[in-house]
Length: 387
Ligand SMILES: [Zn+2]
Image (cartoon, rainbow, N blue to C red; front, side):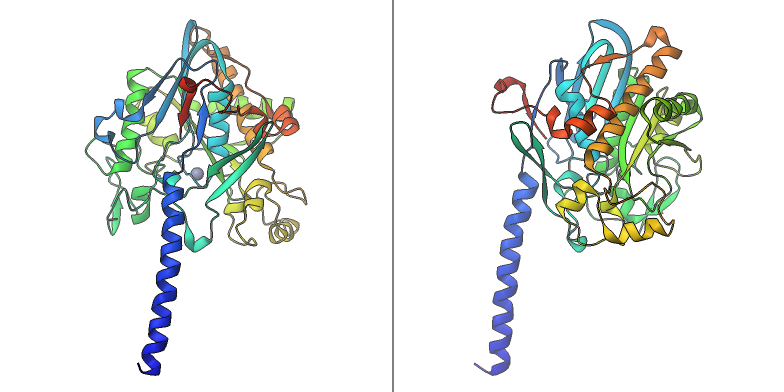
């Protein structure tokens, strides 16, 4: 064998080894299931495919938890992991699923809205595949997902994504982004089916408020805020002011732009009777000028590069050595959701939604996020669901 072929053979063997190891890791990540303990308030668990049969048997099908109160009232849909690289969303949604007790009205929670994105990763950015939250009974391990659905589940991408039905031209990648495919259609690409199914829940169940949970870069102005269209603006503003006065955290209101299509806070309002809200918490992990994308950065949000940028006034949120711990982000989201509910119930008492046993900001910061997750080993088998 010539010297050149010897080198080539060695390189092929190294490449094959790397590919084999990586494919096992990615296969495990895609199939790893997170157990969820349905809390005392959960009265039934449906599948998203029950609202759009075209989703049945696909990687986009996902759990829909119903928490129905004894007394009739209003209804709220809570959506987590529209973007699965913003794990503050699934953590907040699961606190509601595992703890909330509804006295009046109904809560509907979809913790893993983009189930395909939740099983995807971003190798080019060196995302960790998993992260773990400390609980009172050990660690609870979650998958770290990606912003968009996996090309394994929806492919190929077009050169340009033409939004349905508004025909706005969007980036090709956004065809796999479940915050660009609203209001969706049953015969469109997979992510349009996902948003269509959610629209069917809103229409069939006559849902009053829809809440899409997110997180965003600290260098992006639309962060630490509630995004609301005209019809939701009053409730959002009262919520923001109350959170600032009573719980001492900032959460400003951003208007939903009417010319930017496909987003939940725009299309839900325009294509149903529901009032939409999108809530954002800062996610330093998503900023570009940071150190390595470690689990520590994901959970604590401490980064020396962001700290120096904060001193130069380049960030849109307060930032110091303590970073942005996950408990602070999840706590803010819990409080904002509860306050949106309270403000809505004051304005429309006949459609009130009354919920107990969900912690507010100060409690989550004090006790940690994991304190509100229950041990699946100790729960009865028929209360365990997998995300
Ligand atoms: Zn997002």
